[in-house]
Image (cartoon, rainbow, N blue to C red; front, side, top):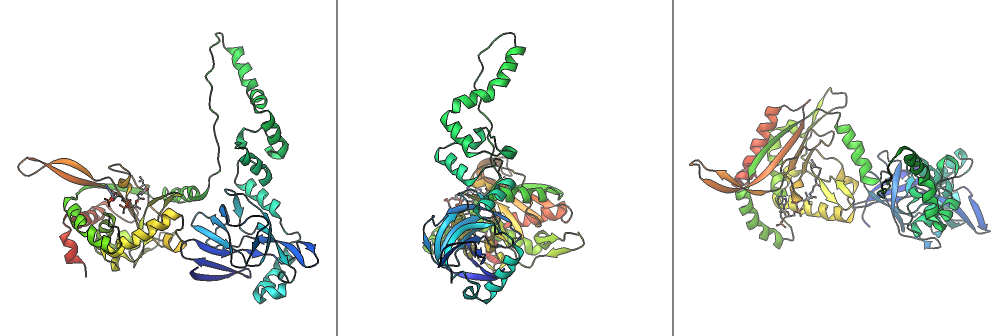
Length: 465
Ligand code: CO6
């Protein structure tokens, strides 16, 4: 495990590694309950993972109840709205309870697992100086340490549309049952274990009871009886993971006045040069697509038009011209849309950009893009053309002021100077910019320069150092 960041957090250490970050959960040192004279069960609290994250989704457990776990062993992978994080144990012990099922939302600061540790291990003195002092503070603040049940309640109250306990969820999952279909009889609409069991015993009875009222009403108001078409009920699911990020960032982006600018790029020359260089790149283990050329051309054009690599301060009093060209690339990953960025593109060759893009794509596929790869972007490109489309209306990645969406390259009939029809490959480009900072003329000049590099890739040779 490559550890590149270490932060002290309420007396626990917070370790972040490249790819999925690794975090050590906090274990409260108060005597939760004693199992025998030498052992005690303590809740293992999910530590603060930084960046204001308060909730995470449990993606995977690496352990199960009854397992003996060791210090630094990974116990779970969780997904925040920023990155996937691996949680590692700080103590040796036996797992007594997992507080969540996969897919549940866990609260930072609430118990993640309950672990049986040796009494001496859990004593403040043997946990290290920093840990012991903070643990004592925590005990003093907390009159009763929250248990697994409390974590689940918090998570469900805040997130799930279905209020229930993990045990009930588990029964539902084991029986492939959609909990939204189960009539809830508990307080505040909570689905009780009895509700699930009686539904499983006789689902049709409950279904018919549920629909009986509307059916009677319709009979009363309808004169002719026509056979009713069976309908499919609506399905609700909590908003999770990357969709939460998308909601937050897109809501922020809509507050910024965007304008769009679109153009066509003739890419036949680019296609030829790429096919030549592709083999050279392959020999070096690098997959070379069009993106590295497109990204490099953006960087070269940004040198001339640095306002497009800037951001406006929140109070709108200053423009920050970013020194580095950290070009974000929208990525369609199995987990959803992510935008890692290639750092300092201005200092990278086309092949180096390709290698970095390959690395990010691979991590994206594995769901292992780390916080460092995802933060610090200064400009964004979205190659939606790998999937389809011509033009698009991209939405800014705030606080950046410009984004470009690339459409699919298509062979098109064009006219030459003598009105002959000439087939050409066209790449469709859609820019969007923050109109508070960027004007249309600047956008058009930037786009023209960028386009010139791609239509005449020989120009790269002149521009590159
Ligand atoms: N046209 C035609 N062919 C293309 C294009 C276009 N625009 N782009 C790539 N390709 C080719 C590419 O050259 C590869 O061909 P071969 O080298 O011959 O195998 C192939 O398609 C696959 O390319 P790949 O995806 O592997 O690599 P690329 O570097 O081009 O793209 C990526 C990397 C991460 C951008 C891409 O994989 C991806 O995830 N694209 C989707 C991005 C996305 O979801 N954007 C939506 C954001 S929301 O923009 C938005 C405004 C709305 C619509």
